[in-house]
Length: 417
Ligand code: EPU
Image (cartoon, rainbow, N blue to C red):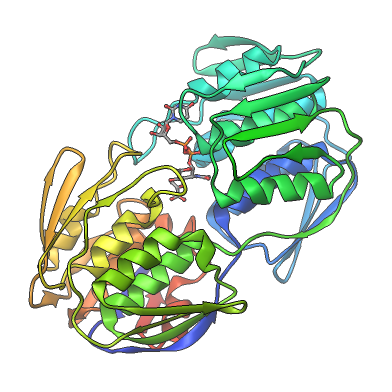
């Protein structure tokens, strides 16, 4: 079992290149199923969830090969339309393969992705949209047997702008006869990236980034070369790391337009943030101030995935900050671990109030989930002494090398097996 060791109290100084976005690469890997021919994904992050997607593709008969940070996928030889229960449970977002397999094969057999550390993660919107496109779904003992001999485009209205449902339905609609319009679609930058990838493969998708995405289905699709967008949550994490530890860093490749709500909060707290076409710089020299209430919301609102890392950055701020988590039920599991380090946080339902303290102290803490784990690293940078972070497998799902990146940014961070 690996651990992360972080010794706090050192101001950051350094530069890293931001890895490719996990939440963009995962749907793109599912989308490769629609393309006949080789897809070459450049700047693909080596993550546990990416590895799980690769194993799903291989179990379907597809080829996938890494060369440095490039992943080449060829789905021409796909010979199965079922994903095993073990593979489905490995990653919550495995459900995204459903739309792509249906579009390509006309049937799919998968199980439910299983429970989640963030609370219930239903896929009812994915399934009702697929039904509306003409899929017959039989649910039996946790398995979904889906048949769609002929998917037909139509208007789909999502009752909430689910990221996963929007992506799944975009993929299914690529195989549907006629035009599909997804209304109340999620507007996240990762949806735009998926649209650009699909269009690079020959699909006809428009409107991503707005609430209405239009897909003209059944276009012949081929392989392509693609570089996915930089990870905006990894960017937010390292900005919060600089805010927490103090210092000056540069995040090469990062795009501020993807995380305006996060940089606005950090500026309010007292950080100086600048961006140009090449990346984002962040300078923090004084003790942070508390900020106005942080309410998580679908994009362009404040991202739920950045809630924990911003909270960690504000633990030693002057004053109190209110957080309101509106996306997932169970997204304050990092709070108890932060309290072990001396933080003062009170949680009542979806609200958490962080009152800044003078000092934090290094402790033995446990990652409860991916972003909660990253938050422990952010807090540890500002703590006196050493923090030992256990159960780091959660972090590996989304950060390629968090200890290496933090070292490049000037922190004393290492990983031991
Ligand atoms: N929801 C439903 N029914 C559905 C789908 C979603 O009720 O059919 C609910 C969820 O339970 C949740 C809310 O809608 O309360 C939002 O879920 P959404 O579908 O938008 O999220 P997701 O697609 O499951 C993606 C990211 C998450 C990120 C959320 C919100 C990927 C692989 N995952 O999840 O990322 O938090 O959008 O932005 O893209 C992470 O990277 O740490 C992570 C959890």
